[in-house]
Image (cartoon, rainbow, N blue to C red; front, top):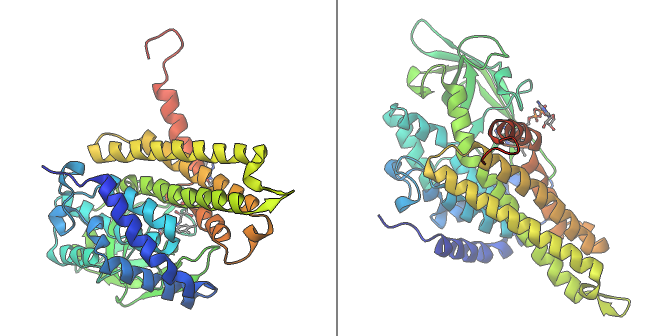
Length: 401
Ligand SMILES: Cc1cc2nc3c(=O)[nH]c(=O)nc-3n(C[C@H](O)[C@H](O)[C@H](O)COP(=O)(O)OP(=O)(O)OC[C@H]3O[C@@H](n4cnc5c(N)ncnc54)[C@H](O)[C@@H]3O)c2cc1C
């Protein structure tokens, strides 16, 4: 079975994003929810027209054939990672519009893989891969962030077999643009219990769904989605009743490593901006790039970035292989996102006053990078995962390793 050539894919994604980047010039001052939504819709439309959403659905469910990169019932994380890095290099909104299309809809693919193939939901997935519908993933709540067992939104089974959804989600990307949500809700038990959680498909148009947008430090459609007695047919259950936590974690297991790839895209752009600026700007009668202190900085940025890219490539290949990639993904996400923040900060410093001018590329990268250390598992959560792995797998000195 022929595979997609990842280098060719990288070049294709790179030249596509490079062509679109100048068009973002008109969105320089994205200072309102409305402006964010306009910029997002512009990016979404461009990514859709480029055919890139094909990559967010499995081949067997209407997505792009990826050969032996991944089995036909899933998506290739290596392909997603290559595209995300190229898009993030050019503009965060391109990357966001691309990946959210997969993150919000993949629970439907996981549900199908678990033997639940409701035709309406499979239709929703293929419309998502065409870009005709926009999804959002609803896990986080006011009382449930790093610890999803705190989910208190309830979905109660009614006598007629339908479910009644009550509660709310917050920090949900795509609030304001989403056509539907894949939502983690409690079908039994109490907040604090890992069991008793189930995922549901919830159309934005359902009676009782309301949204409230808010803004974060970099342009990003986001907000709360509230459920007030939303009636859901039983066929909107994704996967098994009570299997919601596994479905949610399975979704993150596939997409989390692509956050590392986006971080690497921001970091690579920051390094390129630094190199260009340090060579062009003269102080003390010499280009800044001739000063050893700044060259040392470039060397360290380069090493951290390369290490992050290698960890990300290793983790993506491990996920695609179907092996347990928990530790590889945690390493890649932790290291890439923390390094990207550090690299973007150095790039701001290299630009001096120009680095903090609102609208400059490095100022934008500095803000774009920050949330990646928080969503889809904070850096501290990645450390908890890795710490456990290290304790379990590191042999004592003197024993074979
Ligand atoms: C821009 C953005 C987009 C997002 N998009 C989505 C989305 O689309 N869908 C969705 O469901 N959610 C989304 N989120 C929510 C995100 O997943 C949560 O913010 C994240 O999981 C952290 O939860 P929290 O904010 O409640 O922080 P908390 O869990 O309250 O954590 C606060 C701090 O305490 C630390 N901490 C927590 N527990 C421990 C521990 N045991 N040991 C050590 N440190 C700990 C954390 O690392 C963090 O530094 C998004 C968030 C942001 C910022």
